[in-house]
Image (cartoon, rainbow, N blue to C red):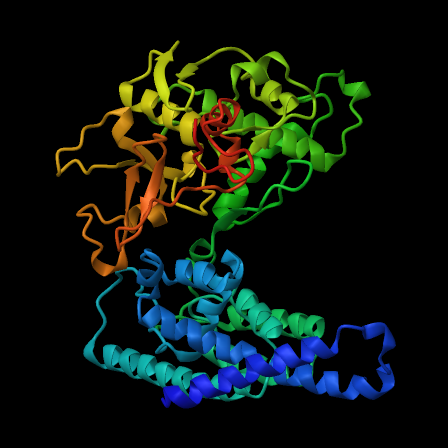
Length: 487
């Protein structure tokens, strides 16, 4: 690739956008009939970004671009260096892999009866032919993507193709090529409907290389996702289950269909819609699981901790929101429904928000320390991260191998991604930094690989931690930026 030519093109594009934005300072005074065709052409030109973005994401992934932002995964690079959302960064990586990565062979089948030599030869030939068709389809998909299928259409195609089975017919690459070709003359919603129909048919026709229907197709696709909280504190939850999972869920929810079950009123006064009854029954099932004290059913802490200061507890109001160990903000009514309205655990902080002591707990030391870190830090301490302590790891600031003890002063919270990107040797190798404690404020921050100043997690979510609130109240932290202050 001619890098100098690439740089020249990007400078031209940037300059053109700056000039165009300057021309758009007074859109009310423009002759729309005259500018309309030009902006339609601009939209056509911008559609090429979908292919370009996917190609750059694939190049970033191959280069291990996470190292440029002190991380392991290329996803972090796209988010931090380009300012993308997690979903957009993931979408670009998926599109890049679909268009440029060598097609993968289908997953191996479970062990079965031994095949004779002729049958095994036919299987190998069928698999080789399938890979050949996928490679050809991928070349067609790249050509179609270059023909300006918009980035929005390409992202939608990638999302829909996640529902395709491993042994579908046509294959992933073939359907991708077909969908990108259709994108040239179909609108977004029409394309979505068209593609969903083709995916259903491809899954129905799919067979393994041994010409058998894949019995584990649905199980391979099982997943559950929880969206971000909205203004009311709730979130959308979606899942995909195989037949066995559906049967178990249905059986667990059936008792809650009856009026009066999980309700505070008699059956004859229960006016809850069926959808609400099912949610209440699911919550009853989850609560029963969390209340169980069996090692067989409790694989993990399985508790919800809520953080608030003593001052907040004294003056709590209906509209207040308090952070929980699951990474969600809960109101007083939510806390009461959880049954967490009493003093189950106390954490004593100094005026900098550091944890001094724990009380009212008979749990093991490791659990107490995890709860103390929740109260002090709330979430991953890597700058910009909002993963709650319930989904994160506990990290030794000075590594165990280097003599670091399992003491509260030597522990912090790191999400799985940032934990794997921490360089315990503290030498900046691989572009990775490490966590350390600021001697002045006592806060834990990230030290970049070049050994520069510590960087702190100043996200809005982290500012809900009891430690941050106490630092602000005592003047140990700037109330606007959330960074360590003087005094």
